[in-house]
Structure formats: structure tokens, C-alpha cells
Length: 221
Length: 221
DNA sequence: CGCCGTTTTGACATGGTTCAAACGTCGTGG
DNA sequence: CCACGACGTTTGAACCATGTCAAAACGGCG
Image 1 (cartoon, each protein chain N blue to C red):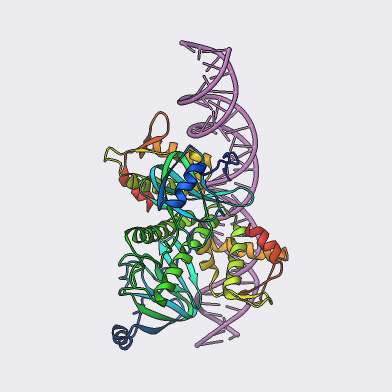
Image 2: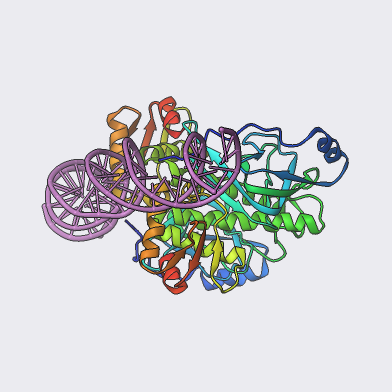
């Protein structure tokens, strides 16, 4: 049922030099390799982040290892904003990632105004809307419907040209843990959608071409 | 799979007299009977609300009738706050309900300050946190675990004395549509938890006594 | 008392999981 | 350049938790 990987190596989030910079500047860039942890569930929420490049996943674990991926964050997306003092989710790099870290100080939602504050507020509301869609998906949709929804959503966010060619930055395990399925189910649904002609998978299986959006949208419901 | 009731009677949200008051005052009380609609999915979001008494459910429907209940709102809770101009959920009374309606104007999250604005911001963040918990529940927990989580959460929010006696204001169908299960599964899990001695159901089946919170919490994970 | 909506129970069906193994792909080192 | 090992993906077969369908039991109310 769960596919969490206990294998992620524990790596210091930032180099010492960077930490000093982070303390003195309002924002700072950081890079992470595939699978590296940006912050952990329970860490002090001293920063929030914006994806500069790559994809970030935010997730939680149950004590027995079951994992739920809250969201995938694409370039431009803000993540890691918290109401309290702690991160309620862990964040990890999916592949190579660069992020911009912003000091949290005084960026509480109700506090100071300014363009960034507005953006953070907007990001929070978007996160809420997404979470609500995801509840519908997890609570009431079939495996096929979940995959269809996911692909359409990703296609929209990635602004893929109408070529319909869509790169899937994350492995099947991540899709599974995001969609409340197993890896095997994800794989099977994808191959079935391919057999039915709704999608076409690239040879390396990491890209999809959406061949029949209407049908996918119909599944999306 | 779905248990949505196409039976909810369409009832004008408020009496004409009240509507006039609502237009001239910043807030106004409204009452609703069991099953009445407070606002519908897609309605213009001219107001947001606070529960004065009773329980409110906010939910969405899929075109084929499958229903997902986003949340149950108890006295004191704020609901119906929207980023855009439309309600993304419908809201209905579970049993008799009184709510306070607040005009939305200028209450946008980033706008005016003031105690109510702060409260709305806090409510939004709480809604996000709840939605995230619910994703974990829907994506990765078993039926028993979902029921246990739900009961504990409700017990906490209802501030039941340590007597452990907890009133369930909503019917089984509503629990089912909140937890991503069927009515039958909800019923079976409850009776099984009762047989196992973790809970005791009242004769009328609308109250639970949590007999073994430790065990429930263990299930909650 | 008798109706009606809700809850519970039973028997059965099935979508998705589990367990296991084959297959590809990619990076590494001989 | 190829053999190798690690990892991710796919596929197969058996299983099971939950869904489905049907009916009985219960409680409330006129």
C-alpha cells in the first residue's frame, strides 16, 4: 500500500557559508540534487520557498511509513508557508532543483503588506483550492479518473504547447503517493489509457502525449 | 459508491425581509431547517458565515452525483470564505442551524485589517491544515482508521467532557461522503469498533462513547 | 398502530492491493 | 565497448478490503 522510501539520505540542507548569507539577506538561492530534503516535517519554519527550476514534492508520513504527497511544486510556485512555527510537511527535490528561500520573519499572512505578501496570500488560497480538489479526487474518484485528473492538471500547469507532449518529472511511486494508489495501479492505469488511445507514453516512459483530451476531461468528471 | 441525496428541497435562502436587512447591515442572523441549502456551489459569494448553532456541511458534487463533504462546521466555525467571486462548495444545514452572515465586501484576505479579518485569515489557514490532514486520511488510511480519526477529531472539536459522550449530529451518509466510504462501510466499522470495545453506541445510534481513546489514537496513527 | 427514513446486516462482486518476477534503462567500472 | 548492478517500470496471478445490492431491524412520528 505505501511506497515511501526510507532511503533518502540525510543531507544538511545548506552549506555553512550559505547559512550565514541567509541570515543576513532577505532571500537566497539554494540548489538540491535528486531526492534531497529541502526541509523536514517538524523543522522550524524559518523560511518559505519559491521553485526556481525543477520540481519539489511536499509530503507527510504516517508512523508506519505510509506516505501522502500533498502537492508537486513547479517553477514559480511558492511552498513551505506555515501558519505555525513548524513545517507540517517535508519538502524534497524531485530531480535537480533550485529554489529561492525567503526569510519568514513578519511574512505572517495577516501582517505586512507588499507584493510578496500578496503573492504568499494568493499562494495559500490556491493551495487550499488544490487541496479541496484533491479531497474530491481521493475520496470519490476511481484509479483511472485520478490519473486522468492528474495528467490534465499537470499539463495545464506545465503550459505544455498544444503539441500535447508532457514531461512527468516524478517517478511512479510519487504519483502513487499523491493519488492514493500503489505504483502498480498507476502503471496499469497508464498502460490501459495508452491501449485505449487516450495517451501515448514515450519510450523512456517519462513523457506522455495527451491524444484525446476530451476523453480525459470526461474521465476527470 | 456515492450517497448524495438528490432530494434536498430547493428553498430560498432567506426570507425577503431578512434580505433587506442583510443589504443594510454588516451582519445578520439566519436560520435553516434540516437539509436546507445555505448556499449552492457556484453561487455568488456575497457573504461568508459563522455557525451560531447546529452543524453545517460544505460539499461538492461530481456530475454523476458522487459527493465529497469537505468539512463539517460546528458552532463558532467560519465557512464560505472564497478567494474568487463564486462559492466553490455548497453549504447545507445538518439539522437545525443558525448562522451569522457577514457581507464579504473588502474582507478579501489581503485587504483591510481588524479583528474579523484576522479571524478569517486564521480560519483559512485552519481550513488548509484540515484539508491536508484529510488528504492523508483519504489517500492512505483504512476504513477503521478513518472512522477512528473522525471520531477523535469530532470529540476534540466538540469539547465533550471527559465523560467521553459524543453526539454525532450527521447521518451515516454524511460521514461516508466525508470519509470517502459507503454508508454500509461506516456502519460496519462502527459496529466492529463497538464489538472490539473501543466505542459504545447509544441506543438511538446517534451518540458514541469513546471507551478506549488510546486504542483509537493508535488507529488514528 | 403503521408508515417512513435511517441504520444495520447479509451475501456476493470487484477494483485495487499484494507479492513476485521479468524487463528496461542508465551509470559505472573492467 | 560491453558486462554488471541498481533502480524504476511493467506485468501476472491470487487475494482482500471495500463496494454493491437486497432485505431486515430499528426508531421516530403522525
